[in-house]
Amino acid sequence: MRSGLTIGEFARATHLSVRTLRRYHESGLLEPATVDASSGYRYYTVDQIPSAQVIHRLRELDVPLAEVAAIIATDDPDRRADLVAVHLDRLQETLERTRAAVTSLQQLLRPAPGPLQVELRTEPARLVAGITDTLSLDGVLQWYDGAMAELDAAVAEPLGPPGGHYDNDLFAEGRGRVLVYYPVADAPSYGRVRPVELPAVELAATVHHGSHDDIDVTYGRLATWVHEHALAVAGPVQETYTVRPQDDPDPAAWRTGIAWPVFRVG
Image 1: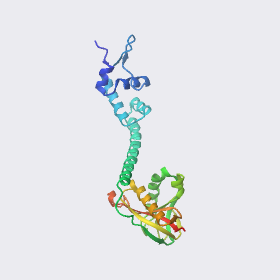
Image 2: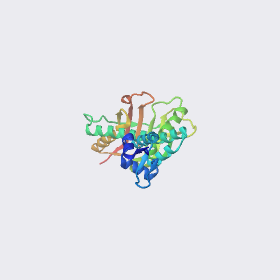
Image 3: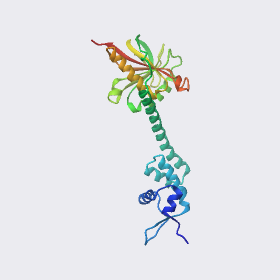
Image 4: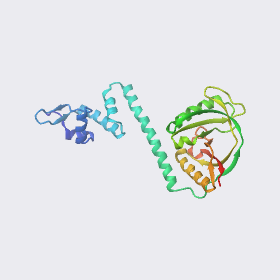
């Protein structure tokens, strides 16, 4: 009677190369059912095929070997699902970053025709209900979601769309002050929400159309316009979220105002 599937037969059955199977054996991830003591030949059983196929799929998703081992080792379906979900969340974040990078690159390689529409305007002093914090650049998006949810709950009647101020250090040093807010007539003090007086300011402002995947391109075009018109930036970047995902699920409909406080040089 045969001892089982040879390593070559098992490789054909699972689409895992012989070299890979040897590496998995050495690491303890997938050990043969038996190893011939005299020849060293590895033999597998058909019962090991499903486990090998699971490993193959997990590795295709770039799950680290240590996490694959933990998933294979547990018999608890809920625990296994939790371990897989952690990696899938990371994978989704990676896919979103990749999509954003591709969109931005496409815009850079095929720039929009015509000049950027920029408005120089004076923004009067105003009262806002805001939440502010000092953050690292990679933590802004998650913080923003929580802060805006808190503002939405605290501000019943805003006087306009929400906005955000982002200090130069956030981009230059990777950490800086962030403020998100609603313009209001009477600002509440509730949770993290506090009244903030924004000073009057001169702005060079434009509008970014669509999703934020390529908003960096609009930032770059605005910077070029400011430089060409002999202006200097004099404060935090300002964004106004005129049409958000909450307002319209279609990314093509989203509108984000971008404005830089400026003054003329020379």
